[in-house]
Length: 239
Image (cartoon, rainbow, N blue to C red; front, side, top):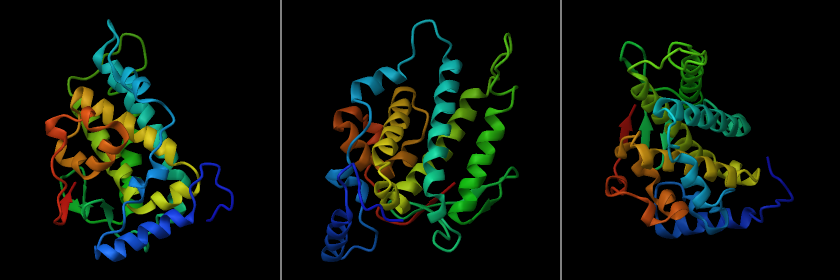
């Protein structure tokens, strides 16, 4: 799908320039279009996002995590839905991210399976929807309490959602930009990143693959030493 008029000022010339750079450099990985200057914008200023993730005085920690988890799930699901027609079993036979990262799906019995990206993301969204709809995990009724394992469940959800975001940036950012949704995606990524930085919810080994985007959008000062690990150059497989 090609939009003739892009109100965000990003056109195909930027993509062609990126491809020429890749060809000249002789790399084997696709150019990181999301690092092009024309796409490095967000819909909210950095200060607002940092205030967004700070736990207000007197508010329950689990309640705070729950509200952010629900918001991130809704927005990531929405962004993926806009480009899902481009994410096919043949076009994306593996669930991949930047840095030659490949994600394997672990079922309830712990068995890992290599699946196509659309199937993996469907598993992620189905699992997340089922979990956030479970009253015993995400309570909505008065006097119902969060389970003791709530934070670990949130960690798993955010890790899986991070995989989805990484795949979108790696394989479908061209479509996102052509649809003029890159600022929204960057805002969602910044939200997820700052929440993680504030509460240390995702293993740094998971987030290092988008460390360059994190630095570009939020600045080096926003990163902690544990979150600025060198991006791996060798193929990596994770769950």
